[in-house]
Length: 79
Image (cartoon, rainbow, N blue to C red; front, side, top):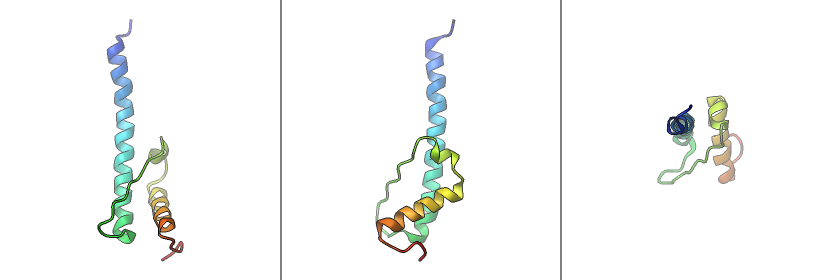
């Protein structure tokens, strides 16, 4: 028989790995983009979509963040 506690911990562990990878990718993409177009002393909150943050190419992730920030400030697509 399968020990329920070990099975549950394996599931949570795999979830944690995905969640942490998504957070690392989003944090790094945010740093790159905000270094260029971010406003100093402003807090930005990024919310990852399940699995999308892990699967999308990193350059596309950076591009999506840049487009989103420019929309917030009403800027043209290209500065």
